[in-house]
Structures are given as C-alpha cells and as structure tokens.
Amino acid sequence: MSRVPLRRALSDLPPYVPGGRAPVGAAAFKLSSNENPYPPLPSVMAAIADAAVDVNRYPDMYATELTEAIATRLGVAPEAVVAGCGSVAVLGHVLATVCEAGDEVVFPWRSFEAYPIAVSLAGAVGVRVPVADDGRLDLPALAAAVTPRTRVVLVCTPNNPTGPAVHADELDAFLDAVPSDVLVVLDEAYVEFVRDPQAPDGLAVFAAHPNVVLVRTFSKAYGLAGLRVGYAVARPRLAAGIRAASTPFGVSHVAQLAGVASLRAHDELMVRVEAIVGERARMLIGLRAQGWTVPDSQANFVWLPLGERSAAFADQCARAGVIVRPFAGDGVRISVGEPEATDLLLEFTATTTPR
Ligand SMILES: *Cc1c(COP(=O)(O)O)cnc(C)c1O
Image 1 (cartoon, rainbow, N blue to C red):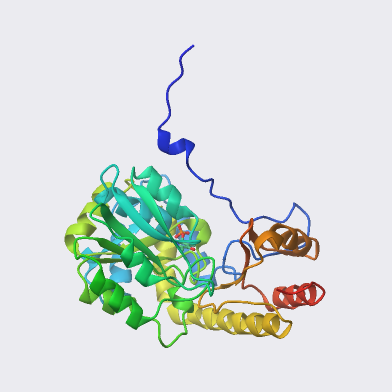
Image 2: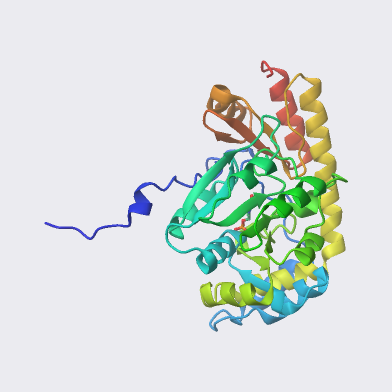
C-alpha cells in the first residue's frame, strides 16, 4: 500500500525537547524551561478572568490594543509591531516572509533549539556557526558564513542556552559586514534581564539598520509563557509581510488582554525581573566559588558546559529536587528561579565534583 509522502525536511528535523517537569505529586523546583517563577500579578489575573467571558468570539485579528501598547512602550510606530502566538511562531512567520526554498539561514550553534526546526520548516537550509568556548557568539564568523544564498542571519542575544549578550561594537561591525539585503533577526527573548553595559540597545540598532528585525516575547520577563504571545518589530514592508504570513487569530483574546495588563504593570514586573537578576548573580558567584566554570549570563539562566557529564548531572540534580535542562554531550542549562531553588542547587553542586 502506498503512503502519503511526508516532506523530506521533516525526517531531518531535530526534535524540540521540552524542559523536564516534576513527576505528579513530587516536590521539585522546575529550572528547566527559563520560566518566570512568579505567578501572574493580581491585575494580570483580573485581565485574564475578564477576557475569559469572551472566548466564544474570535479575538481581534490584529491585536490592535496590544500592538499599540507595545508600540507606545517601545517608542515605535504601531505599524512596526506584529504580535504572534509566541515569538517562536513569530520567527517562523518572519522566515516564511523572506525565505524561498533552498535559501540559507545562518545561525549560531549551540543556540535556541527552535532555530533548526523553524529554518527547515521554512524550506530553507540552516548554516550553523559554532559559539565560542566562553559561550559568546562569534559575530565575525557569523558574518563570514554569509554567502549570496543567505537570506537571514539569526542573532540570539543573550544566547540561549549559553548566556552572554553580544556587545554593541561587535554587533555594529557585524552589521557593517553583512549585505543590506540580508535580514538580521535579533532574538531578544531575554532583553529585560540584560545588565551588561556593553550590550546593544536593540531599538537603536533597529532604527539605524533597515535590514534588522527584533523579536521579543512576553514569555520570560513578563511571565506569560503559558499564554503564548510574542512580537516582531520590523520596517513597515516587512511587518506587512509577516502579518500576511501569520496564522489568522493567532494571539488569543486572553493573551492579548494579559499582555496589555502586563505592560500597564510594567514597573511592578520589572521589580521581579530585578530580583531574578540578583538571584542570577548569587547563582553565578556561588557556582564559581565552588570551582565551576560558568560563562557570563545576561539572561534568566546559567550554563554549565559539562560535555559528556551533562545527562548524569541533570539526573542527579533532579533527585536532589532541582530539575534542570541537559543538552546531551554539551552542557546543562539552569534557569534562575526562587531563592530556595538557588539554595538547593548550590547545596547539590557543593557535593558534586565541579568543572
Ligand atoms: C524562550 C525563547 C523564546 C520565546 O519563545 P516564545 O515562543 O515567545 O515563548 C524565543 N527565543 C529564545 C531564544 C528563547 O529562549
């Protein structure tokens, strides 16, 4: 019997491995998915409850109020903002907007595991450029990997899972080296956590370079991972293309109102972000004092480059009550959560041979 053939791209697709979850009933800190440890603010909960009564209706297809609120906060035109159901979806729509079959998309590796999947599904060819040993993106190498076939370069800053942010001067040099008809996507999922004074101002970079698009999300600093809402900031022509490529009604009414309420509560939420940044410092200092090698982190996670030890470390850590995210053969990513989770993690790592 003959079967429906599947696209060849699918057979090569690396699986997206979600961060581990605690077994039902088990007490464990989930530091495996870079989630915000804090529950929604009361004002955001109220917006979610209010929105729930309207879910028999389709949402506002263009997420007008949310788009305007984002634009106001960022100081850009509403036409520049395109919301989608998570920035992973937005990235897919960006690629669908500019990639023809067989075009090349250059991205760092190891980086966000959604990249190779999104690139293949767009029908493009991924070109991976190794991240340096200190966890920093190698921007000169990313620029050197651009060929006449290259349509897009993905720049993840801070880089998930290794942690460092790119620096403004090296990004400027990179953008000078990349042809102006190659789209540069700055994935700023963790931008609110960046404290490195040398990090670029993404919005200024966007303003200065017509071939730059920003991708941001409400999933991390804003704590709305479960509602799936992210956005791109793009020039009007590209923004219109991304809108055309987007899933209609992709951002639910609940997500739209929660996003608006979160922007209203911005200052309150940034107090929480500051607490996570403080906890990140405590985790980094604690681990390094124990002898662990940890790259700088400008995000809400830290990276232990444990190589072949990664899976075993993650298993033992879970038994100690902390669920972390191993990348087999490469390293372990540990999200920054509650202070109690940091305490428990540092207790565990103190009893383990560092590297
Ligand atoms: C978490 C993350 C995202 C955000 O994903 P959402 O789909 O918005 O939840 C995007 N890029 C990177 C690098 C991430 O780590």
